[in-house]
Length: 180
Image (cartoon, rainbow, N blue to C red; front, side):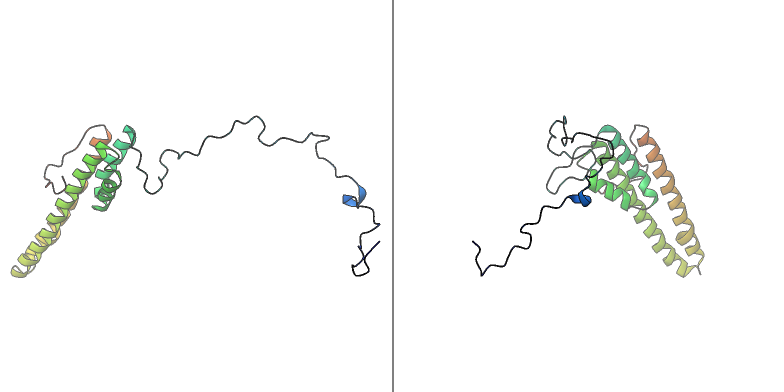
C-alpha cells in the first residue's frame, strides 16, 4: 500500500533502458578480455632522488663524483672572465661537496678579489695623476692599465680552466689569499 502523502515514483513500471539505444557497444579489437592494471609489475621501491636533483631542505647534499668535482673546479676559474660572481657562487654552493672544487674556487675567488682591488686602485691613481697632468696620467692609469689588467685576468682565467680541466691544479702567479 502506498502512502498518499508520498509522491508517486515516476520510474515505476518502466523497464530499464539499454545504452546506445539497445545496441551493445562495439569493441574495437574483437572480444578482448579485460586487462588487470599493472599485472606482473613488481611493487615500486620508495621514491629516491635522481642524481643531481635538488635535495629537500635540511638534507645534506651528496658529494660530487670526481668528474663533477673537476668540472665545477674548472668552471670556477673560467667564470673569472665574467667577474667574481661565478667563482663566489660555485665556491658557496660546492665547497662542502668536493675537495678540488673547494680548493680551486677559493683560488679563483682570491684572484678575482685581487684583480678588482688592482683595477680600482688603477682608476683612483689615474684620476689623481690625471688631475695634475692634464689627463695624460688618466690615459695611462685610467684606461691603459685597466685594459692590461683585464687581459691579464682573461689569460689567467683561461689558463686556470685548461689546467684544472686537464686534471691538475692552478695557482695564480700574483694572488693575495683573502679566503683561506
